[in-house]
Image 1: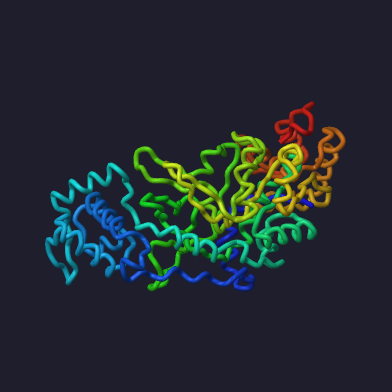
Image 2 (image 1 turned 90 degrees about the vertical axis):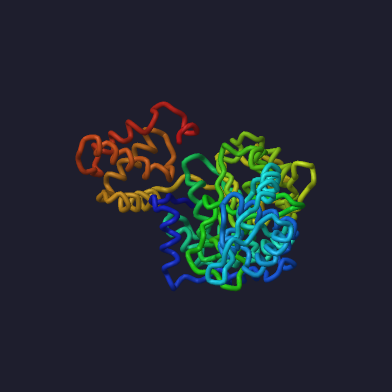
Length: 448
């Protein structure tokens, strides 16, 4: 079964994949949320929107009505309605007209009120969407609705060396839209497969809200570090509070804690940041090195039994109120530990697909090495690789791990850089790389 990446960046793979017109789409585009033309259609209380507009005016200074609409991502018509109420309460005033567009400034009473509002909640960004609207949109965009076919899988894993049986298993797991367990010895490429899984959705675009409002509280969802915005003009009739993005891919490793799976209230700004699984909704969440997190596997089991089974998650606000959030994501667990020692049978049952990622055979090792050399612009020498295989298996008593070609070639390149010469794949270079890379006498299970 196995493979190793040739150090092609994920971003470049995605751009390359999208340039191929021959690639089959996995699904149709999701229709954008319609643009609200009145306060009633926004789905958020009018008082909340008025307070948000006042905070934006205080933070940003005098703005035209169109600029205020742009900053809050509300339509010009909705903002005109809000302005009428704010002016009636003498919280803001029109200071002039430019091209039939009013110029708005906050008044002294407005400043006092804005400071009171900011002391309770400093959110002054795009207007949030309602929880009802969020749930509806996320359900429509569920990964469970995506159909993955062999061309999608072949494209996603084109940079890896994988046998057809493993590709079929991965494709089947992706069509489940639920979860997959990748396990096996260290250095066999589980993390690389996990990252590549998201590439099967490379054509899919989903709508991500800037924020969600729940009982007057704001949950910030859109994260430019996670959500990759599509560089295309959104429909003029779409709700600007939503951002068109590619399906997200979120990676967490040993740093994962229970707190990261809950709503995170910033004590200074006093609004919430969405947890990892909420940011990953409609996409992929990768839990790398599962079993080595700061929270115990059974804690995660207890936390996610219901989400994995029913597709819903429950998050708690600071006051203790539970909020039901969709759990519409594909979860990848990757570990080099024995799954049966990590979690019980009930948890494994909820992970529909399990794939063992093991050492490679000599022909696969050659194929991986050839690809790595091509990426590194080294001339591939089969005889040198044959000698390396012989030494790894017979002298070092190591299995042929898929990571070895990349790591050995890296050692060769680093040595050549130090010696100010061009790297060459020969017996002397490989000998130096092996001596630097392998800890002679260390058990195979401890090797990376």
